[in-house]
Amino acid sequence: MKTPSNEIFQLVKSLDSHEKAFIKLCLHKELKTSINEGLFDYLSSMTEYDENKLLLEFKEINKNTIKHCKQTIFDFILKSLELYYANSSSEQKLYHSLFQIRILRNKKMFPKAGKLIDFSIEKAAKTGHFLLQLQFISEQQLLAIESDNIADYEQLQLKNSFAKESLITSYTVAQQNQEKIYLLLKLNIKGGCYPGSEKHKIIKTIYTDIAAKNKTGSFSDGNTFILLQEKFIEYYCLLLLNEYAKANSCFRNYLTLYEGANEIVDNPEEYLWHINTGITISNFSGDMILLWLLDGKADNLLNILPLKYKRTAVLTNYFTVKNSVIAFLTHVEDFREAGIRSESIMAEILTSKVKPSIRKIFLANLCQINLW
Image (cartoon, rainbow, N blue to C red):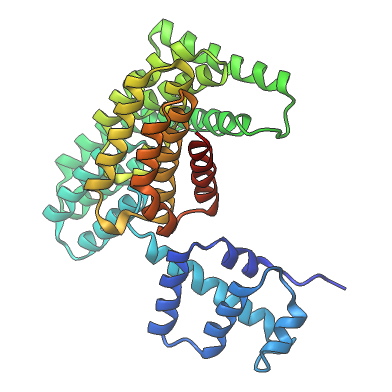
C-alpha cells in the first residue's frame, strides 16, 4: 500500500511563529473553509504525520477528498508566504519592478517605464542578479520599439549586444562562486559526507584558486558583486584552514567592501551572519578591538532596522552574535563583563521569538558565568 504524502506536514512544521500567524490571518481574511483552518491548526499540533488519525479527527474529510484538501492548503500556504516575504530581498524587489515595467509599457507610459528600467538595471548589476539584468535590457529595447524610437533602438541593440555577452559570463562566474560558498559552508559542519582529510584538501584547493586570482589581478573582473563573493571565499577558507591572523585581515577588508557596496538594512540576516563569523575570527586571533567593533555594529543595525524587518531569522542571528560575545568574554575569563552583558539581554532573549537553541546557548553561558 502506498504511503500517504506528508509534504504538507513538512511544510507546516517548517514555519516559524510569525509565518504561522500571518497564514492564519490570510485564512481568516480569505474566508477559507473551517476545514482548511482546522486542518492547518491540527497539522501544527502534530508531532509526526498520521493520516489515519487526521481522518478520524475531521469527519468532513475522507479518503477520497484528503489528497485535494492537502493540496489546497499546501498551495494556500505557499501563496501566503509569497505575500509575507514580498519585497524582503533584492531579487523579489527586482521581479516586482519587472512586472511594473511591463504594466507601464502596456499602458503606454513609456517615460515612467524607462526611468524604472534604468534604476532596475543599476540595482540588478549591484546585487549580482545578472539574468534579471538581461531581462531589463530586453525591456529597454522593447520600450524603444513600442515608443517608435527606432534610432534609440538601433543604438541600444549595438550597445547591449556586448553587454549581454558580458552578463552571461558574469552569471557563470557568480554561480561557480556560489557553489564554492555552499560547499565551504557544508564543509564547516561537523561530520558530513567528507572525511576530515578530504575536507582540508577541498578547502585548500578552493583557497589556492582564489589566491591565484588575487595575485594575477583577475579578481572579479571589475564586478563588485563577484569581488565580494571571492573576498568572502578567501577569508572563510583561511578561517577553516586555521590561518586566523590572515583571516582577520581579509575579514576586515571584506567587511569594509561589503558595507560600502550594500545597504545593510536590505539583508540584515546576512550582515549579522558575517558579523558573527568575524567574532569567531576575533576569538581565535585574540582581537578584542575587532570584537567590540562588531558587537557595536550589530547593535547599530538592530537600532536602525524597521520593526517589520525584525523577523525570527534576523533576531536569531542578532542573539547569536550576543551569545558569541559572551562566550568570548568567558573564554578570556572576563566574567564580570560577561555577567553585565548577559543581564542586559536576558529579558529580551528569553521572550523574543528566536530558535530554542539560541536560548539554550545563552543559558549555558550564564551557568558558566555563575560558577565564577
